Image (cartoon, rainbow, N blue to C red; front, side, top):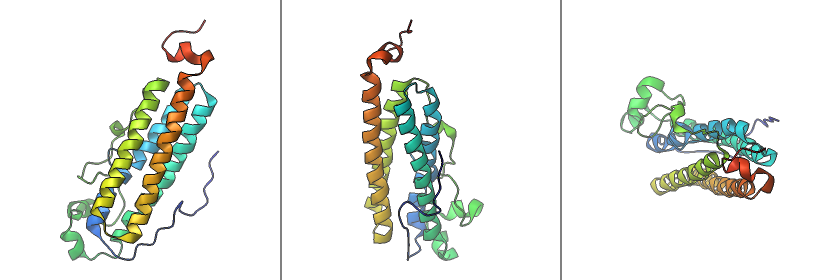
Length: 196
C-alpha cells in the first residue's frame, strides 16, 4: 500500500533565506488547516467507510497529504537554514527559534502547537466527507493567504502547486460524497436507518 520514492512530489530549491515567510508557511505544517491534520484526518476516517472506493480515496489523499507535509517542512527548512541569527531575531519566528532553533516543528503561524483537536473523525461517512470538503477549502484559502504575503518566486511555485492539489482533493471528496449519497444499497445505512 505504501510506496516512498525518496524525492519530493514537487522540486523545491529556495535561494534566499526568509524566516518571516517560513513562519507563515509553517502553519501548513502544523496549523489548524495544515497537512499534518489533513493526513491524520483522512487516514483515520477511512476505517469507518463501508464503500471500498471511498475508503481508497481517503487512503490516497491521506498518503498524498504526508507528501505535502514533507514539502512544507522542506520549505520551512530551506527558508531558515542559511538565515542569520539577526534575521531570525527580527522576524515572527524568533519565539519559535527559542524552543526549536531551525528544526521543523508542527505549529501554527500564531505559535499554537499542533493538537489532534484540529481534525475531526465522526465515524459518520457523510459528516466526515463534508468535513473533508471544508478542510480542503480552508487549506486552499491558507495557501491563497501565503501567496498574497510572498514575493519569492521559488516559494510561490511550490505553494501554487500545493494549492492546486487542494482543489483536486476537494473534487475527489465531492465525488466520494456523491457516491455515498447516491448508492442505493447503502442509502438506508448512510441516512441513519439500520439495514435489515
